[in-house]
Length: 287
Image 1 (tube, helix red, strand yellow):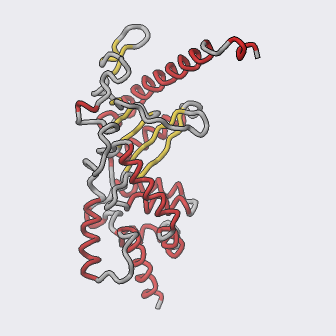
Image 2 (cartoon, rainbow, N blue to C red):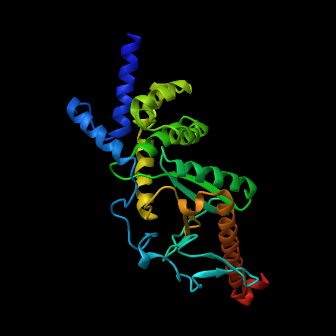
């Protein structure tokens, strides 16, 4: 009886991971076909559908913000020395995407997929960078999602809702190291991984079927499209700049480019604040 219950739970987890909208009347043959389709979908984040051209960045040269702020493509430090190149070391949005930081810090959004070694490297580097610059930046993990690839947000937010944020991050590590028949994006393997980490499967299943997780998955799809995510990892800094694996693969390189961009953003903010203060009416200033 216990074995039967465990397999029923496993079936439920599989069903909810890959088909949050599919009801119980799905036939076994249809289920097998859909699982195969969705598993393949989670492993490819190239060119997600319905990406808005005004926000897409990357391989579309007309969309890159090479001169989006009337800056030279080859950026300079304050001492006149060349630093990093827009379109090579980082990318700029042609139209920056406005954000509303909750605590005044610069938001750094890491879009990721599970079973992604480059995402793990990016997380390691950025997590360390935040620890060193916690007063300046806030690192946000954001699963990549499309309408037919919801594995990452479903699992991530289910674990977060169970107060297992650390485990949701650990899965980034563990899934990056396993592939093929041991892949943790395969439902049965994930099932055993959850048990080994003391996750109550009935509670996990309850979360993954919840409206809260469904809403988060929907938000993930919208954010993936809004920011024009075309690869993983994909890091958005203050809605202005983008880093990809070509920069994030190395910690020293990542830190240097981050220092450069964060410094630029802080200078922009300081200039904006100074300009605002100088343009206030005299009556307001005297108050």
